[in-house]
Image 1 (spheres, rainbow, N blue to C red):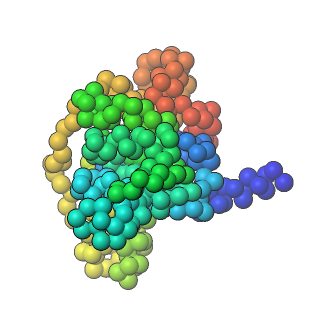
Image 2: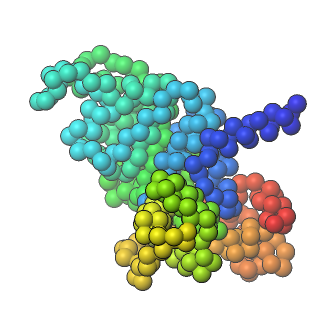
Image 3: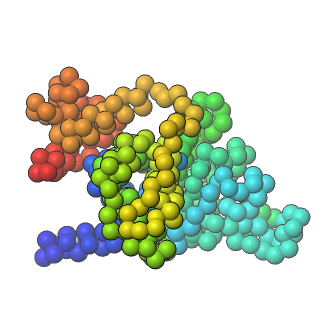
Length: 333
């Protein structure tokens, strides 16, 4: 019975995670964190570069939570003018400001009993951050133009591609709000750190856009796939998705006509901390070793350090989840 329950649970999870494509160890670490935090009611902070799939992970957290039958409401804090963002969050009464001709519910009320996903939280104006902190701490707020205090039974999942700790240091983000949001951080790896997922993603997008455009594209040439795997994809999955859509548009037969990849990556080189550089170095070595830690061909040997030292560093960087399981899976492959 326990085995049957586990199979049924995994089948349901597979359905809820079906939009997340990939089987790399780096992605599996992220999904394991989702499995751990999803059933709780804790606040989640999703970190990662633009285009890494933060909204999909937020949706996955909601989909395995006790709130999954309640609303999943999204708000992009960078896409709404600062003067309208407060109304979007908390709602307003008729006449609260010029143009407020009707009463409107905010996203907190719309998400009652469910999950509110606050994307690009690092772009929220400072003057609103205190009001958001109050809702998170006291679970209450007022609509604009109202004196009636309302309760907010909402789980918060926030996301950003910015360095929130750096914004706090520069007084561009409130420290108390940062600590309140940073209950359970999940860092999404960029596509260049999960290159083994690229063939799966390419096939997924080819099938998606091929079906949409009524084109049958059964295969992708090995040399073309190799070029896609070597490209660093600074725009991550979103850039790859757009590239494949363009390729399907150009295709006239059953072999995709890939447009040329940029010869120069037009992105600004962002300075990174020593901690982030070390984390990337560890991930690169683990990926190269198929996530085998010990042994003559393991990541520890590649890095020239004892196995215990590597395990300690992995734990420090939050990449030590289910280490034995990953080692066995890598060995089986």
